Image (tube, rainbow, N blue to C red; front, side, top):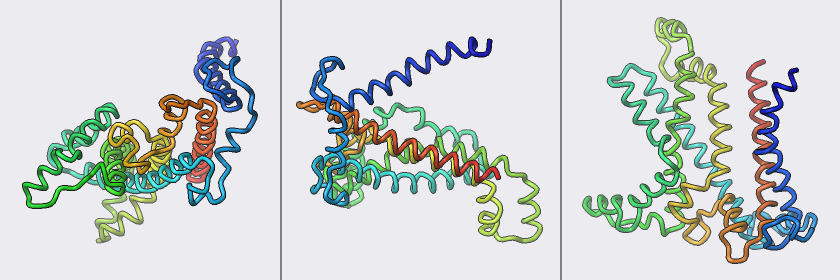
Length: 294
């Protein structure tokens, strides 16, 4: 009887999750540009071997598929910078919103509003602001400063991709931390205030330890989201200049769909490797949550 109630959910799960995963694995083992699986030739692990064929993975030019490793290192750098800045910004925002400030509800809505925007809209808004003749350079010229090529210089373009992503998502993670802050018993802060404990010591000894479960969730979700970065950065920079902001999901998209010489099998293999990284991150999150619960 229990299996009968679970059957509809299991069918939906199989239709939209298990079967697509199986098809993706099957595509990764076949070659050619044909769309239908029976028309494709079996190549075994050739795509995986091509992606992993590298003399020195730290230098993408020594790899057989240098675009893949360039995208991997760009994604890794993006994840480190974006998650670090995102966590700090979300923590500061949550601490401010948790205080007794005027129009608290309005400020919470203001910080959460970018989360409601489509990633494409976010990318278009910031491309309009950061382009050569955009609002940012107009304000700098008015202030007597030289204009900056925000989207056409490699360093500035990468920084713009990181900054825009932080701006778009910080409200969501601040909300998670704010919920954790409001769950901390107030009598702990009142006891610390009666003892004359400095605010910095209160933060390190009371707030941060009790907020750690929420912080682990924030960091894990932010890392998974950063590894999957595509839409905002693609609309903002298109992966350029050169390959400065080409991330792993863009490599998969262009290899499988947008390139003049499409290679769906290679794109599927890259996506399988990326999924493996995400599974490892999820397992780490579960281990950390179990460790926090002990």
